Image 1: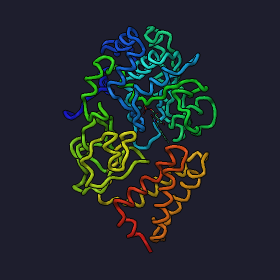
Image 2: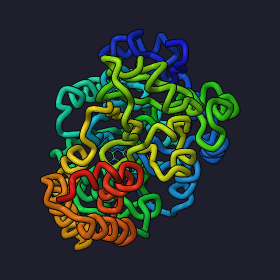
Image 3: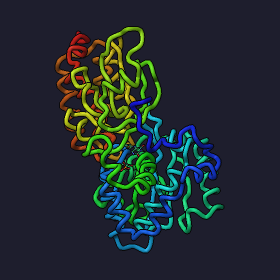
Image 4: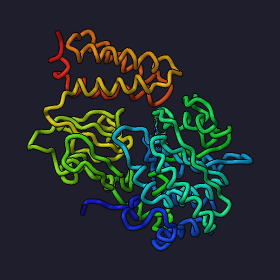
Length: 407
Ligand SMILES: Cc1cc2nc3c(=O)[nH]c(=O)nc-3n(C[C@H](O)[C@H](O)[C@H](O)COP(=O)(O)O)c2cc1C
């Protein structure tokens, strides 16, 4: 659509992902060639200057992260792509990998040159077996053409655990262990895979790199919101006419995403709420729809951009019931390593189920709020820290829906 700017999806529909020649014909691997003529430090400076921030949820400055791994002394360093994409309602990374796998490989190879790594891994969601095949074909073709030089990439398939998207749990899983988060610090850029400096970046983050190297940091930094420049791939689900994806500049508001791109709500129904960023995201009321889909703007209203999933609920949807299903998901996905998450998600689920069944009271709601707040600062990783967000945000914005369920 006219409102879109396609950077990471620039080759979508234009190339056959299984033919490297198609990618090369679009100027593919030219950015890597250019990066290899540059000093690694200059590559990192360019990425830093672009102010590209992670698209996997945490929003960390990509160039800065690379500079930590560059500075770390080690005999071996690793580049890991987080393609776990376990977030319900999110399929942006799949779109990139299945339509343009070489843009990911090129982004990873530029990172490898920048930090001095010879080995890379793509940790792909277990439910994407056909994507794994596409990636393996792309790697084979890239090796055959010699475009990756001495940088070797392997694909590893996850086993379907949501927590394995958390970067340190992902690293544990790559090492063949149970996927549980590590205590941080040390952070992966200094001590990651096999204890070596490791860059973990999201698929969408890496896919931006070739374009930044090609068109320059200033070009990129001028798109969208300055504090989180570039584009965001948003995936729309729920009560919206166009249940599809869009790549839009980050100054696009949630309202524009739902009404302009998404075509509004079907059946002439009214808007009730929208959850941004996946299952752990906050539910946002109508009054906050003019917020741009950028990291800090979302944080300012107590929400998170997360993966960029946009889940719309119309006026007929039951908020309390929806949040109950979500907290049950987290109870199931908690890895159990830390008590606040293991116990907290289970107790939150119990309280939500009680309230949803019409057996709750104000006391239960207060307890749920208190427990949720404790979890946000005491859980070991983002899974438990964010699990209460759907409940806390809906208690804040849609309290009457809860109170209507009381005995
Ligand atoms: C429970 C949990 C699940 C996560 N899942 C993903 C995921 O599927 N993909 C992803 O890129 N990041 C995920 N993250 C964020 C990663 O820990 C990490 O911040 C990210 O991979 C860093 O890459 P980026 O800087 O390019 O965003 C998850 C975090 C948590 C706490």
